[in-house]
Image 1 (cartoon, helix red, strand yellow):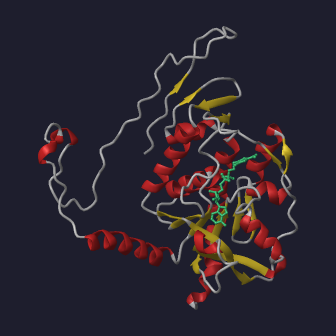
Image 2: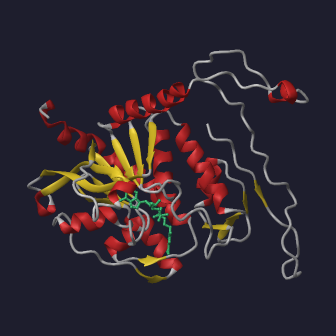
Image 3: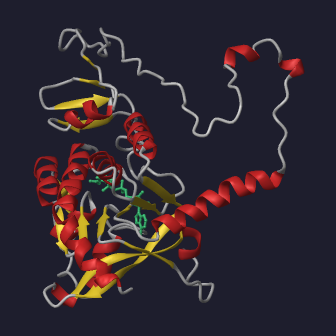
Length: 340
Ligand code: AHZ
């Protein structure tokens, strides 16, 4: 269970000209001891090493043990997640929030996250214009409390996390601790798996993703024939952000295949309109494909909100809800009579 968040307020008189100081200390989040899985030897506490560095020695290892310890697990994961229940494309603030809610609600589902970057987190490592603080408009502070992220209750309308990286590292670490989640980073979704569907626009529904190492994906122009890999899944949640070198990927691909109408294109910045619209609009845009976060602004022609992140968190909460609403129906459609 997530540790409870502690918020802090400041008691400087408004307009005193001083930066607000925390009266209650920032919460010291409990640092749980790591729990080893498959404990092989007696554990040593770090304190026991103190002052004994001249005799210090790591346990012996052969290089192939390291290679096998990594590759066996990775290839086992590729095998396990080749049939996933839900694939989340993009591990930005919206994708990670979606993953947290889904993994917590349904420990029985296999959830794969595909992230093009080496570092998951998307645009949520900094606030805005490379500043540190992350602003979340209320009521998205509820998600911070759920995660146990400390924040400053600065105003009636919004709260402040002292560094965006505190939010991102916390949600990321919680997501990765769920047994039913696998993050494949440095991996790009470069196409969608589709199936015929007479009732859907363009006659197709989405039934999985086509992946490749991002570095390979980036070199299709100058290296020939580098075929991809695939993951079958009844639900894809796409949160690839607004248009850019990688952004809005699934929306653009669906439009290209006639599975969705032309993109509305992200509009200029209006925080008030944008955040409500993204949360409310998060939905299944085509059978099997849910779009949330800023990718949705490209679909709906919604405004951008810039450096305020409440909508990304709550769009993730809603994306998870929408996914679970249609999961059973899409899974039945994708079972294909056990034929393929
Ligand atoms: O690397 C991308 C990023 O981490 C990843 N991604 C994009 N295309 C991908 C693909 N396969 C796999 N084809 C892909 N991964 O998706 C992630 C998107 O994260 P993000 O932070 O850009 O999107 P978000 O919707 O979670 O948050 C957007 C926050 C805002 S609002 C805003 C503005 O109004 O200007 N700008 C940002 C960054």
